[in-house]
Image 1 (tube, one colour):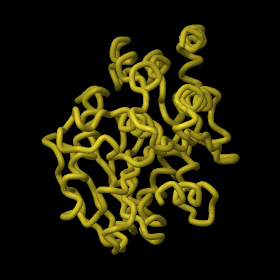
Image 2 (cartoon, rainbow, N blue to C red; image 1 turned 60 degrees about the vertical axis):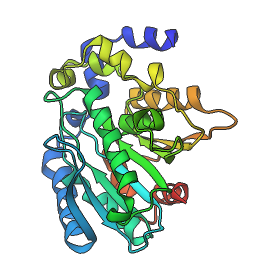
Image 3 (cartoon, rainbow, N blue to C red; image 1 turned 180 degrees about the vertical axis):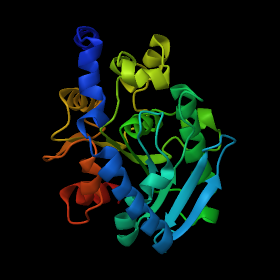
Length: 292
């Protein structure tokens, strides 16, 4: 880990911004990317068998949306959205459910409160509350508690890694150790110190050095089971996002725990989600295979 620390401390704030402030590299983000997702998400909510805004905690955004495929025994995919822990809403990402529901998967899209109203530490705790809620209430939700996979993008990738590192019986004595059967962190933030040093981003997160260390999967939250993982990164993403993904794979893959790296060819941080929801894409096919 010392090599990782030395690597990150040699960058200036401006260089960190170039690597991590990804919206700056997509001037069409507000005009094209988000409107496209919103349109597809509205269609998903209107056309799929969905129950929306189910409260799992006391926070304003502590709600989940459930999209059902019609088979209560089907795999359950819990999805955590991105936005650097300070932006976004689950309603933007309903579109993720569409191809999976069509292919026999029940999908839960999680909402969570955002920084700076809460901390990253509190967001991780809210995610645990959401996963525990789905497990406890699976029958009422119409999903399978024994086939849960977690998946998230960007900040949601970090949340996914934190779920893989959760000691579920310690969180709730009724929960099984192997509650989560697989994880798919997409463009995850596995090591938080460089994000803290990115001034434009951390102005909204307000993460200090202690929290960056405490909430980094690389330094404090290894996977606690041998559940398989597929760590994903876009081929056209910045060097730092490739490093964030690779370092996690290198550290936590073992003979007993399969942690593979999948590079989605020729796409950036945002377009990789558009590839994910293309049911003809290898990304979708590989994800579907992991769900079982």
